[in-house]
Length: 195
Image 1 (tube, rainbow, N blue to C red):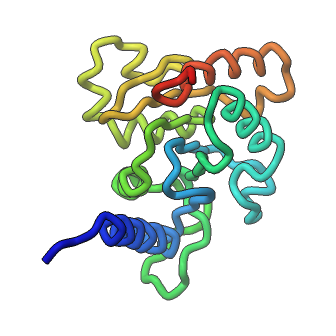
Image 2 (cartoon, rainbow, N blue to C red):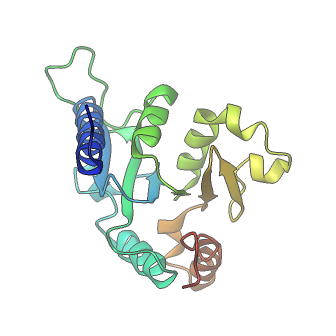
């Protein structure tokens, strides 16, 4: 029996959609394109996000999309993941409370299901969560600062580029901090860039 390329792609897409539906039913907050090469991870949600607004739907999301577009990523190239639970399907036993941190196994399941090329950690809470989740992969990085996901350094983690920012949303109010974030983000051009 021969499987065509189209059938294979459809099967892979269906598998990812099924995984995302399962994660979201269990309270994992994901928004954007699940097939995108850039994953934006947020640990410190703002008031609107805590009240149910879509992740990065405010000024921080607009600034990130503009910055990433400026360095070569396409508008559909973004997916956002929260490191804290949202509302879970009430029919699931032992539902976590919204706002509780995702356990490391669930965070890793979500990242692996999304399988991005690059990960941007938008705040210290996101960096802490990823540091704990991928401790085994970070332990083999020789440079200590890179292994600890020091802001501004790009860490190779299981074939992905990971960049930690120490408070992207808060930096929008300070021009100097905003410039620092821009300098960090410019390190994550799409592979093969410049075009």
